Length: 422
Ligand code: MN
Image (cartoon, rainbow, N blue to C red):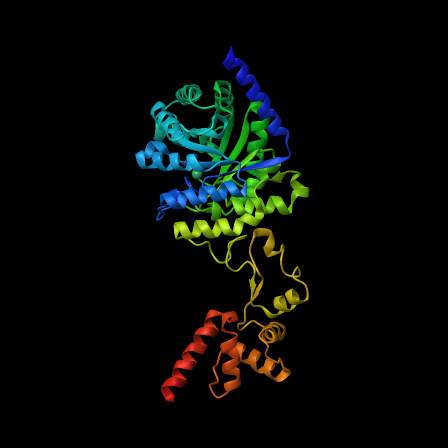
């Protein structure tokens, strides 16, 4: 009796959440991200990242896979004891022993703030070669595990692994059955990153239309970036009605990585008019999150990585520098403050022009005469050091923090040469 009332109340709450104009962000940096080859995240790093994610406003955090061993269970217990706010989730295969490990890891978590995420491969490839199961066996296993999980968890997520390569009818059937068994969210995954935006959109639309109980469960997407389309695919899924986007900070993860949450958050923030839904993750937190994850994993994002790369607010080209000095929006889609970065940096190198050179000279209290500016621009372009021009050498020493590495190295070489000849 109580269970029935509880389930009805939960379904009512989920329907309310689905009506809100919000896209929920789920983070799996500590699980899928941490699976990236060469990464070993230590407990302290995981704790710090989980706390920062909570502070940034993510809806849920995938903390890890407790069945992998007691060390993982211990880390999850530590995080659950200190990190409050988001739903904290542990991953489990559709096995009772895995669910028991997840329940142990999150034993101290608040009832509606802890979740288990169950997954089983549903595609023909996974059914035949990985599980050696028929469709009926996959459904029975999934339903049995969800039902078993309801004994320890109120929040239960079911992820169909390799969903993007699964027959739609079968996928819809398994989603319907697991929702009936008690799953509160279902996950549509692109495990091998093969989708395009149109296919992602079509799949989400079909799920919304063909799963009768979909109103009682949140629909999440988990996309990989093998074709460089994970962000576009996630946005297409959002436009088609997905409630949750799961990704990682800096897009780290298996192979080409997961969708980068900073890209999704930024796009949804800048294009709220298009999507009509907001995100609760503060974009201002993105730069520091990126820096923190890079520090703890030892993997820095590429310099030109959208939203968080080192070059996003640096420019060397003369025309762009001149434009930015006239107005900071001329050559930027958004200002650095939006993602907690900055300031804009005008780097001096072979592509730089007079405006940026004059700007840096004046900022350093050096009189920017036309002659000096001209000599400096010529010097930057030619890449040839002229040790006889002592004034120029001195000025470049003052501006060394703004010079590109190639020019800076050359000055150092010229300086050491002049020492030798002296
Ligand atoms: Mn994945």
